[in-house]
Image (tube, rainbow, N blue to C red):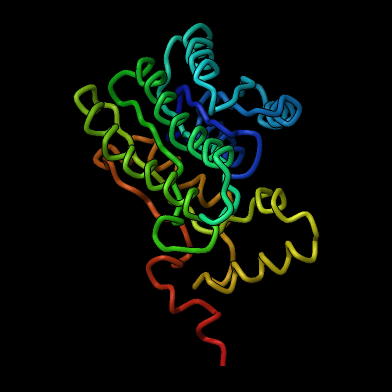
Length: 259
C-alpha cells in the first residue's frame, strides 16, 4: 500500500506504543518518517527498528526550544513537512485534594503548551494538503478519580483540533484528533510497578470495554494513517474515537453483563 507515498511525516513520542506503531504504519505506507522522544537510547532503538526511511531527533515535547529545533532540523534535512502526528503526552493520577503545582505544570506543559507551540512551528513547514493529527483521549468524556488534570489537558487538545483547523484551513492544512480509549501499551507499567497490581488494573480496564479487550497500538495507527492521508481530505476539525465502544455503548461492557 502507498497511501502516504513520498510524504514527509513526523511522529512525536515515536519510540514506543502508539507512536512507534504509527511510525511503522507511515513507513509501510511509503512515507519518510521522523520520530522524536526524550530517551535517546529507546529512540535510537526505534529508529533502527524502523529502518532506512526513519530519522530520530531527541527532543522534549514540553520544551519550546526543543520544538523549534525539531522544526529547524526537519526544514534543513527535508525542506518541508507533509504530515504530523502529535502523539507525545504524559499522564499520571492526582486528585484535586493532593495534586502539586509541579504535577499540574508537567501535565499541561507537555499536553497543552507543547502541542500548541509545536503546531505553530510545524505549520510553517507545511503546504496545501498538509495534515496534522493530535492525540487526545476519551478521558474528558467522564469523571474518574485522580484524572481531572489529565482530562482537562486532553480536552484542550480536542479544542485545538477545531481551532487550529479554523486558523489553517485557508492554507489547505487539515487538523483532526484521535481519542483512544484503553490501549495495550507500556505506559501502564510506568505507574504500576508491581506485576500483580498491573494485571489487576488491566483486567479492570478490559471489563469496562464493550469489545471485551484493550485496543492495539496498530489499530490506532490505522486511524492516524487515514486522517493523515488524502482519503480523509474532507475531514476537518473532527475527533475519531477509538475505544471499543467504551464511550458510546458503555453499558454493553462485560462488567455490566455479568450475572
